[in-house]
Image (cartoon, rainbow, N blue to C red):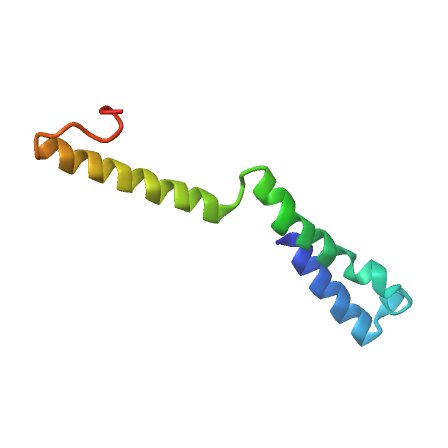
Length: 83
């Protein structure tokens, strides 16, 4: 997220024409946003840091445990132990 904020600040400084940022190439100004895109769309998922993936795993685990508990309460073996 820091890369996104840095990119937004650099765009603001370039657009306002303040200091040395007015002379800075647009490639340098937009580079942090490109790096953020690469991080959020590629590296974060590759390293398993994606919040959506962790949340999905947590929900699936809770669903499995709930199913096993219900089957156990009914006196039936759970789906995992019967296999």
